[in-house]
Image 1 (spheres, helix red, strand yellow):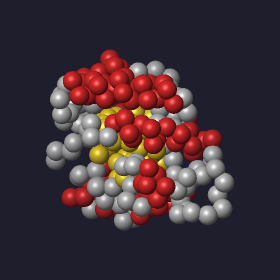
Image 2: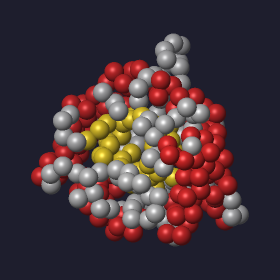
Image 3: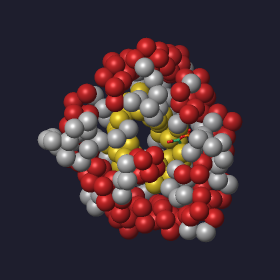
Length: 254
Ligand code: PEP
């Protein structure tokens, strides 16, 4: 099954207006000078920059995604942003269930599932994050934890067109540590079979499963060519346009 690779950048809570616009512009220039990519590029800046970044990348083979969404369509949720609002701003994607939100905001699988369903209802595509802690990895529970997160975080009516999974071992995020290729392959295969249970084999075969956690230009070639690895969700390295672009190049996107 041929799946188009995705390279998504999660800027997290980084970037004032001028820096963010400059970063997106620099990245768009790199994409432009190298021709149409074989992969799909997504930039996920902070909510404050979504509108400006969308203007910068429009028509340049780069989609824009948000980093979070509320599950309600509208109402008394001070400080939150709904899926229709993100859609209205020009977002194509939204990340849900990132481990930092699960940890900092107590987001459970049930909440993540509701957020993803709300995003799909509004016509957004989701990047649903899962991944084990270091303690779970050391206890040999990584595969089971990820299987359970897929079962509980992915809405029942999800399809390949609106759903991307990002496997992000929590202990690998921002640490410079990465799992062995065998470990990545084992989790991605387990995620694929958990998706098969949920949506059937044909549909699950089309879902992209990204790897995330300390992806750099130097390790992208190895990670992105593993079986069932359909791209990367990149944090720190996406804050440098050249590094982010080199990850795509080394990962086989050109
Ligand atoms: C992330 O937080 O989604 C991430 C993958 O971060 P980093 O690339 O910095 O490890």
